[in-house]
Length: 304
Image (cartoon, rainbow, N blue to C red; front, side, top):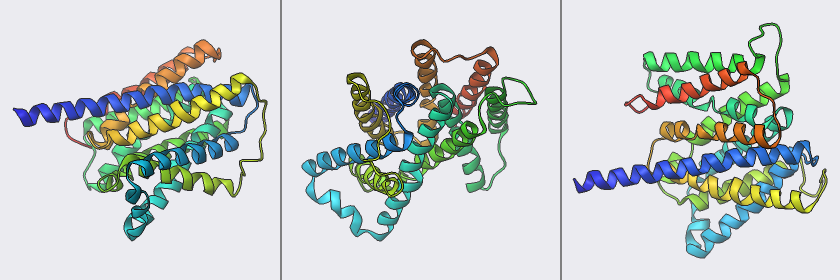
């Protein structure tokens, strides 16, 4: 009984962590849309500075807790390569593709497209486990396809309601989120979340700095824009990324990605209310289909 109680508390903690991260990410996506479309900020600059500043802060915190852990991760060849891959293909990719998708459309559309990731994760594990998809997985995939179609076409077959650029980057962000969810499991078995996230952010930020140096700024500064940039650093990066990866210690990657489905809802609601983003009925139906994908998969008792 005691073991069951501990397991239940651990799962509850994992759920709380991932829900917190999803809510904050949804809010930060809408804030990013404001900075891009109202203040003229570039996604490249925001991603670069966001990663480097937030990553350095996390490494300082990790160093203060345990000086040896911060640099010890580089002594393991396998972990070193995994960290570099996670930094570029996971951390940097999920940030960059998502922000560019927001810039090309809006926070709500970009976030809904990104949350095709659970369906991609399900397909990945089907191939990994070399088994045929079950009924729920097939239904979830159908929901994902129908939802995406309605979201990007408004139900009109002969035209896209969003640009091809927005569609491309939205789908790319879903692949990046799927990779980001699956990849760090082995790293988390050996190292703490702040160390992994801190290094991943710094490496990703330095990587994109080669192409987009942080001193090449475009946009309009004001007290409001400064506040929103700081909001993205703290509540859109440091806290949610820590919570998201920490949740993987208590619940599975598939459960984590499914529970995080509240992010697109929060992004959509705030975007519509605050930035007056227009969503027609077909787009809402498409969004509900995508959310339905996650709900279908989350009701599968077997781990994906």
